[in-house]
Image 1 (spheres, rainbow, N blue to C red):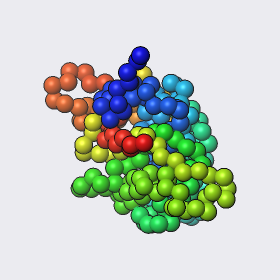
Image 2 (image 1 turned 90 degrees about the vertical axis):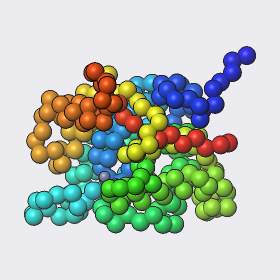
Image 3 (image 1 turned 135 degrees about the vertical axis):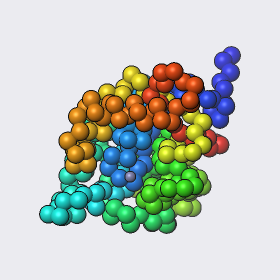
Length: 251
Ligand SMILES: [Zn+2]
């Protein structure tokens, strides 16, 4: 008989991705380009290993411009289109946009209900979001999306008395097994993204309106420098990794 290591004891990302079934993941982010910068490499690794990955974007990033002639509505359309292109590069599914305004995301019942709905609709076993509990600097939208997602997973999404109206649409309670929190100070899971780094760079660059004409080589250099800055001092040639805090939910 094969004994499986409990998920909370697995420290190797590849082993974790192999152990979780079925292979459905959901990335829940505040803005277009959050996914690509924070976990684009991990998404590429997952889709390369046969995972289905959904990207849920809470706002359409409709304030991210310095162009005085740009309107919020036009910018939202542009940024959604860029996010679709980035998702295609990473092999993810068509992104879902929740349509909140940039900078105005609140950690409240409304957002939690919306996230619960998405979790019940797609039934991911792995969820990636922001670490909303990280002390120090953190964009308010990131913090609120991270906290609302955490609370939506536990306890709301799996308890049928939360939002019973979802049942009318045929949606059943669901609890993902694993949550990965990015942008964290307490990383305990590292995903080696060396082999998909160019794909990550291209996916980041698909957000053309935010990139000020940066080239692929410049982006690769930027991602490598950032990786070096966070690597341990004794690492001679650090591979580029994305770092997460892992939370395993009991069943
Ligand atoms: Zn963001």
